[in-house]
Image 1 (cartoon, rainbow, N blue to C red):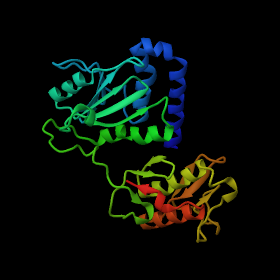
Image 2: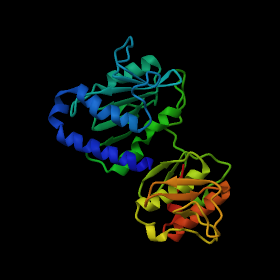
Image 3: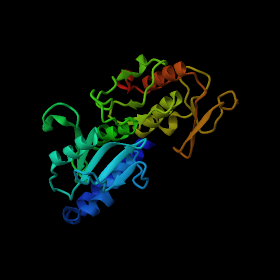
Length: 289
């Protein structure tokens, strides 16, 4: 559900850029209100909460358009501009260096660029990732913009000498090879769609959600059981035997469905793998990170 909501909102932003291009090219504030603020919100930043986002942040060196905060410390400055306008990136980098801020983000509402300020290389090589809301595929935008979510896990430190952990991506582990003694933050499917992992059970929920959204799992496949007398998915929270689901999770598809989540972490991984195989999906192309 998270992915579909973000996908829908980004599609809306694409439409706004095309419809109001003239206004956005003349008016930076309209870009911030209509494009930048909504995009930051999509990836976890509450632009109305001063403990997370401070606009027009004053420093001795200058005034970045936004400061993104974690636990009272700045993790990134954001430089905003009118659509199609260029930014003095080096100047903003100097703001970050002066304040000990590890990241700088520049955007005109369409093009976004994220820089690792402390990386000991020339400016062009400090660029970590970039995307265009208007021109890139939505799945690719979400994949690249996920760094905005990861910044919320970063503790800013002016004495930082190593690459921040947001730059060092954790390895992708194929679903069948996942270990229950490890922690994972996201599951990435073969089409690039990314779902957050909040618990072991959420992996099972994400697999079912993705299968439905991909058109692999249809209404005719319900109730669903894979090598078991117990239903994993049903229109009502009951198994074949009539016993009630012990830990039902409702999802809003086909008028309402229930997923049985009462499984151990090991069983969640096994069931998720089996369900993917059942619908002809190679589980090794679904990875955890």
